[in-house]
Length: 354
Image (cartoon, rainbow, N blue to C red; front, side, top):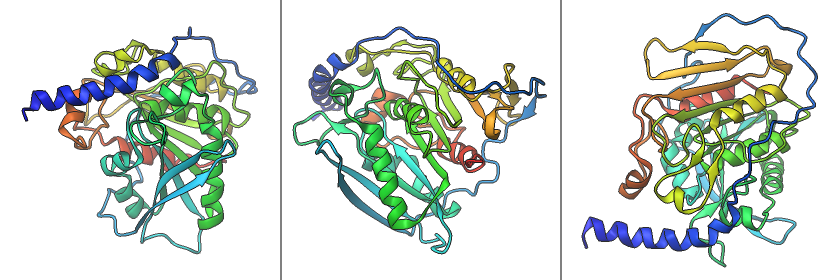
């Protein structure tokens, strides 16, 4: 079978999936964020600083811990699945940091675990990582998965699946089984998983200290967390699946009918909700001129909101080989000069709840 025929067969499958997805993706106009956060009394504009993407973080090592698959029944009667990695380096006598890692739309927990490299980082930095599965397009819940991030995506949004409740229930279970540090519970997400991570920051703020995302946007019309949540957002200028400035994606993304909101709108909404100083800080990485880093500082509870624009980066998870040739065909080649997983963990680990 030729490569072209293989791609054609897969594209036919994805078209079938997306035909049931498109009804859930009605574009919504961007609305100004609603926030009840008290004003920050500090108005001094911070001085520019140097961005260090991997500060205070150990590089990944070969994972030698325990990987397992679990499931739970949510109040709506659904059986939800997840993959769990507990590093061998974990100190059982100390409550552990937890990372909830959300795969992209049409992805799976197994794919994101294999592709992101978070297991190796968990081993070297001593945190637990769980990879939940979204909702599948097929009746038995298998196949390509999506999250209900608000206006996107797929069957999860169409059926108004309570993914916020699912993640809350999952955190509760892991806390009971493993002793999780509530001040160091974080979320990472890619694409539709990034959109879901933003929704969790808005609605599950009592359980989450910070989120780190690539290639997403804000999927809800109101974001007013009673407790501020720190954010780091990475986005490539060559991302055609979720354009950085918003609008319909090209290729597979265009078939869903989604009109994405601009990426910067999301970080500005969280900066407003966290009552950050109105003038963001320009940061530079002298070793990588492709990065344009904007940081909102002086936020409530010492939170931070950071926006990293990466010149030339595509939709693929940065710094990690594509999980298949087909993924490269549809998402683009991964940007090689920034490790998204390590940069995100570096930020999250330094933003525990105060």
